[in-house]
Length: 425
Image (cartoon, rainbow, N blue to C red; front, side, top):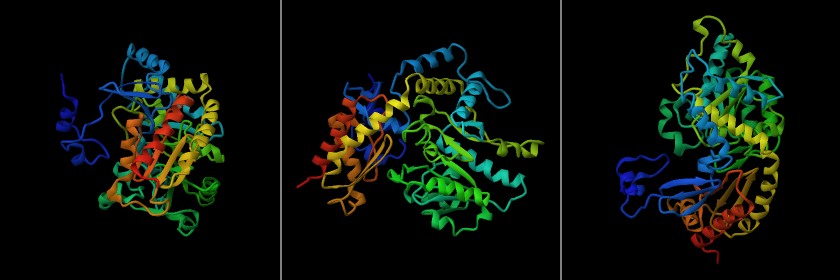
């Protein structure tokens, strides 16, 4: 029988993980082996609530019968064929269904890729080439916001505003300007800007930071006034996380580009999509010199598209968004005891996304080397909850299928783990 922990330490390299600590003799890797609904089980038979939806991807729960059946049916046909110069029925249907989710228009074109970073990369290349093709090559700069996170590939990481993630590679990134809000943006020369990129309503990796109400609509107006394109990074916020299908729709905003990934397939398969308008698409029509030379081998993979179509069917058939409103309200009520803890500085909630910020006495940040957030999340395992911290912000973002009882258990686990990790007296 394989000794899973030893094998993993010997051969695996995990993302966003200090591997020295991981490979240390005393560390026991948690090996997840199965799941059902909002629950996961490890190789030892221990059961946990999936408190961060398997890094913000899983929407409807693990082993949802409709998505499982869709994948099995697609396997009886074909798993994958190239989308370069060919097409396939699941991708064609999915593109149409994604566009139908934006009835306000004018989004009507879909470019498929693999993940959130590539969805952003596609939008950046389209925006830059659009202005080259339409006679405004001077519009070559991108603007993002302080503490932004848009992925880790070189183009997407150029937009990142979190030094720990992206600073080491700054010498290889393209020029991007970071601003902390609308007043700073308004000081820039808009004639040099191709696009502004934003995580609508809430910044995820920044620690679940909420934008002021109305900010997104104001940004859309500014972009329209100055001919700047707006890219909405809905990789985290898309598909119901904020309580509406897309975060941008809460302020009546239709971006020029929408980047989708994570929940696109219900958390089953890697797949991403970049939505844009006919205006952008039309600029690329003509000879080979106007072609967008960008793509991936698994673009529009049939299995991923089948999973995504099944996920969208679940939204319709199970009335997911309407049912989610009750859980959003209940979650807010359940968090009241957490808000009252001595070392909780803030509890930020946007729909079914929660960030619980820890500070000493609710005021002073804990030293980074104390790894306070990570220690609290580790303690939560003994109470049956799996989640991750963003520095000292505990994230709770469960699948939509979670029951009220499971949701209460998840909040209780956070309450207990903060209490035992950080004495309250």
